[in-house]
Length: 184
Image (cartoon, rainbow, N blue to C red):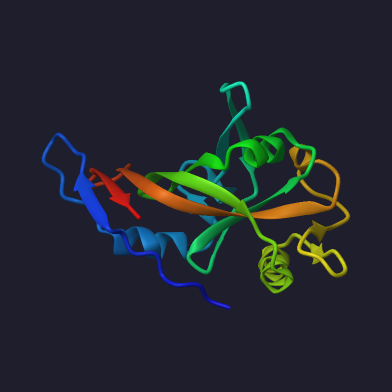
């Protein structure tokens, strides 16, 4: 089950020091690589934490670490219906997903939409299970369940969300550095 490849409609070099544009193809390859990385300073198997920012109904921001996965050219994450992030997204789907990868800090601005297709939810559950979280789809639905999850996920079942980016930023953290914005 593969979605269409994300291709930017526009790109802009944001670097003020003469660094070259960061190629989207390089970022795409990095996103498709393992999310457990060895680091010279942190030791092996250090996870890259993904942070989700949402907007409360009163306009105040809310940010929380999430277990997002990159699959089929998109980020997916889970949330219990009664969690702050899920309630915020029900009111306003706008969100920001940020994380650091080797060579780049990345910012995805867009919307998070709930996945309602049981086949897609099954595909996402299989990807999570392959990564070590033994999750399954709730019988006849598109929500997930498991014996455990992150404390901030709330109790099961968990809805699956897909992040639809409108703008992505990459800030280079190694040579040749740079900063680029893509619009989708």
